[in-house]
Amino acid sequence: MSVTHRLTAPAPGWTATTDVVVVGSGVAGLTVALNVRKAGLRAMVVTKAVLDEGSTRWAQGGIAAALGEGDTPEQHLDDTLVAGVGLCDEEAVRTLVTEGPDAVRRLIATGARFDRGEDGEVLLTREGGHHRHRIAHAGGDATGAEISRALVSAVRVDPDIELIEHALVLDLLTDAEGHAAGLTLHVMGEGQRDGVGAVRARAVVLATGGMGQVFSATTNPAVSTGDGVALALRAGAAVTDLEFVQFHPTPLWVGPDAEGQLPLISEAVRGEGAHLVDADGVRFMVGQHELAELAPRDIVAKAITRRMQEQGADHMFLDGRHFGAEMWEHRFPTILATCRAHGVDPVTEPIPIAPAAHYASGGVRTDPRGRTSVPGLYACGEVACTGVHGANRLASNSLLEGLVFAERIAADLAGRHAAGELPERTVDVAAARAARPVPLPPSEARAEIQRLMSRGAGVLRSAASMADAAAGLALIAEQARSHVAEEKPADPRVETWEAANLLLVATALVAAAAQREETRGCHWREDFPERDDAHWRRHLITTLAASGDPVSTPEEQ
Ligand SMILES: Cc1cc2nc3c(=O)[nH]c(=O)nc-3n(C[C@H](O)[C@H](O)[C@H](O)COP(=O)(O)OP(=O)(O)OC[C@H]3O[C@@H](n4cnc5c(N)ncnc54)[C@H](O)[C@@H]3O)c2cc1C
Image (cartoon, rainbow, N blue to C red):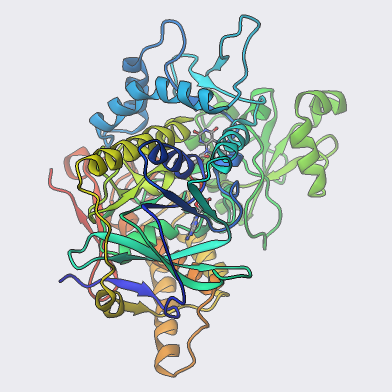
């Protein structure tokens, strides 16, 4: 039997039972829950905070689908393949773009209200990398909030979807055949389901979102700590493409010790003519690219980071003072209010900005039905790697991916249920006990992990920067192990479990990024500035060794 690992935690004190347990309540998790219900299966959604606390609610631009006149799935496929720089799985992309338009129509039928023109048709806009107007949006720039509102309303009225909020999922439980049979979780709150418990289920779906919190600067909310990827690795599943993290060039910089989610200063501000300048007021994008500040996101993020490194600065500036007060108030009221809430007045001063981790293209490897390499364990949304994004995500494809592959998981579960292939499972308690406990780092390790990652494996990477990050991460792991040996381990609690997840995901990400000796998509190596198809037009598959260390193996070409 292969060795698995688990977080150090008390034994479960209570047990609940359902048919399908879904971890996470973003677009992906709630779509799975609503659709398995249609197949007559009971669903339980467990989520770390409140239902709408995830990246979905923050999505601004919209959701991409070939809905417009003259647009076709084939054109959407072409644009997606270009963005993915040779690493997309074409079958997965074809699935996304052909099933996408109807999935969006079903989302509308569920209650999501998209912006419409006077003729009643859904309005479509264009974003970088798309050759057609195909981005549906809601409330202007509040698309994710509307999708979340609609899905949360729909699950709340279904009595056969059980919702457990403030529940942090720890690890997978399996039966004697190694099939997923449930999970362990910690519920914060009062009542029967306090503390660590277990949920028994016929199948488990991970929809835990991204891992932006691995870095000190991120646009992701506090819950995006990569828990699903860490859980999958400990359970013996394969993860892939972890090195491909997309960075946004202009989140608001809120101070050297800032933690948590940073507000976005939208690309539209540059579109209206704001300039990127350094502390001396020099427009450093001029001469770097013919489009200057409006160069592609990746180029802008890279140029800002280079300038910061050259000048030993932790941020640059976006200067829109020439807009004047009236334009700020009418064109960008939300951004103006956000800046002012952070003590910056864009009318009279340049806005401090710095690139931040935005989207994880990689994740738990799945097949087109959402199945992972562990039987009965599924994954969808940002936690999954379906092969759709390859080396970089095309703007607004992520909400669509969450929607389409969540529906496919529900269809697979429904088919298996109808065929009698989804029996109740008995948890193999001996196997759960035999899993090796992972020593927990102290909660303070979170900030150190984030600092190491932003410095060593952020926008610009090199063998030396990643060796530094890897050494720092190894030291944190070593200290956690020695504290266990000295019988003064960190307390098992939410903060230390999250720190352990961040440490594992960060270690795996650095190992993969150090191994990929080329520049491709959103993975930029200063020491290997070219794309190298001969060696690297393939994926790195990461699993955990018996020691608990992540090992990345290049896929056969
Ligand atoms: C600022 C911002 C703007 C964006 N704009 C766009 C856009 O315009 N278009 C687009 O397509 N994409 C956009 N994205 C990306 C997109 O929002 C996400 O990729 C997508 O919403 C992810 O959905 P999800 O369901 O996979 O995860 P999420 O919505 O992040 O939900 C994850 C859920 O898992 C829960 N969870 C996590 N760990 C645990 C655990 N251990 N136990 C229990 N529950 C757990 C969380 O609490 C949460 O409920 C944006 C992202 C950000 C941050």
